[in-house]
Amino acid sequence: MDFQFLIKGGFTIFVIIVCTLASIFFRAFLTEGDVAMIYLLGVVTVSSRCSWGHSIFAVMMSVALTNLLFVPPFYTFDVENVRSFTTFVVMFLVGSLVTWLSMNLRRKIEEIRVKEKERSLFLMQNEENRVKSEKEKMKNDLLSAIAHDLRTPLSSIAGNATVLLQDTSKINDTKKIEMLKTISEEAFRLSRLVENILSITKLESSDFNVKKDWYPLEEIISSSITRVEKMYLDRKLEVNFPDKMVMLHIDPVLIEQVLINLLENAAKYSPADFPVKIEVVPDDSFVTVSIIDKGKGVPESELIKIFDKFYRLHDDGTNMDSSGIGLSVCRTIIKVHEGDIKAENFQSGGFMVSFTLPVSEKFIEEKEIGLEV
Image (cartoon, rainbow, N blue to C red; front, side, top):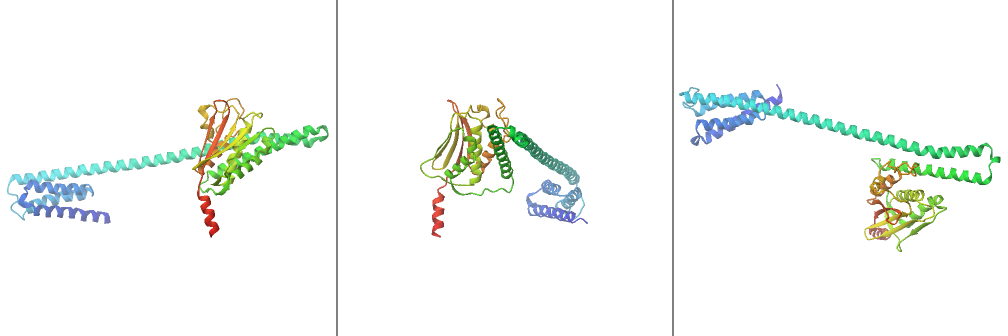
């Protein structure tokens, strides 16, 4: 026999005993109808937790005990008057009705639970499918962006290299230098693209951890400028450092990549006869680094969108060699450093991208502790 069935049977008997003891204890104050109501309460309790068979058993036991213990002649099943008999009949019918209603209610509740569970599973499956679809779309977008960005520089490199290899005697030195310069520039573009792709893949991996260390911001900026110096041979780059050295607890490689991406964009989308400026402004809580150029800027409605992955401006075709990855990488890197990044246009003309990084006062304390140890 089912163990759960026996447990529910024991619970049914326990409820009937409790109803009986309560009726005996207060019998001086109770009528036959009151006793019937107490037992009906027990029947409802059993019906809400047990099976149909247990509930009917509770009804029959209630009627029998009411007749045996609370209706004269006591301790027999004889019935002296019609009124008592009617009470038993009504008690049995009401108990059976309550049991039926309770069973239906429990069944409805169970159906609702099953439907809710099915709905939850359905929504969960839909969410999994949505995430899977988004990941697939992101993967396709990334592959499309990579293919788009690789095609132009590779074609340029291959074309120039092929010409140089065919018959160099027909090419003058000036032309050779231009072609070699083009190969060098396109190779740099390829290198930057690969770095951004590797970075965005690494940053979005579940096991990625930022490797922070104390580092002077001035050195990171200087290193970034060295990395992009080929793009600034024909233009001026101004840097405004604060008087006091700024020490940050950061991943220097990642922050350098942010600066390289921003300097590369500034050189690409601003006129060469105007300087690009780097401004560093520290305060008590944050240090703000701004890259300012004299480009025509970005439409106000797209200032936030430019940091979205694979987002490209489609205005005059000047950004057709952009994969839409660089600024997205910048935002992700600044975000994992608990900072913020934004872009804005100047009314007088020009464009600025600035990012903030938290400044900690713990650098001196930690270094002092390290020296003492």
